[in-house]
Image (tube, rainbow, N blue to C red):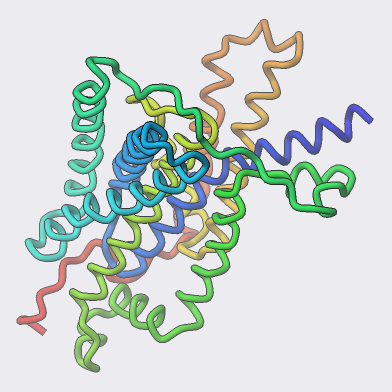
Length: 320
């Protein structure tokens, strides 16, 4: 029975590590499908993780109880929209280089959140450990299925939301008028403008959705695995999410598969440390595994992934 338990735990841990990547990758898809490069996913996740940690802490202090982490998620969503608005204004309205704008968001998030958390928590570089972070929910009957029951159906509520989000994103992008318009401004903005689609408006919407979802991804880390926020809470997860988006060919289902793959690499890295023989391997090499796989996957994806045609190109409606 030990191997059954181990497989179930590995599946469960994989989904836990994949959750934040799924949220962030879905966010990246909405932005880049509209034609706006969003390298700032890492920073947006950092803003979300910070907002969730601080809001949940104060909600606990106010006696909100079990509702506290949900308030934290809402705060992260709002923070992500506000932070992504900076990127939208710079890259869409002022037509700044989209990559540089995203990099600025990353630096801004790292510096400003560390400063604010020290300001709020009397010089500490992290929030107080949260008492009301999310706990795992077991779905009745399904969670009792051998092997996959614990792995798939005993998870954090955020994991269930992330999986539902994948299918909602796919439906919205490929089965609705809104999705068609969003994709059209990322492929042929001048043609879309000609038929009456507001290119600037659609791109703004894409970037703001991206910020909201990426911030929720950051919030899930604070409210599940760490139960606190510090300067290294995200530690590269945003860049892995971008890799998942590219490897998944800007398709929600493909990005989901890639996110699970990267989540599995982190879970396997954790399990390596349980074996005696792993003690002879420096831990740094084990921690490197997800990032090494990210590089390998990106190299393998070169030439095979087709980005939206107008990705990264600023659009001026007055010059159509």
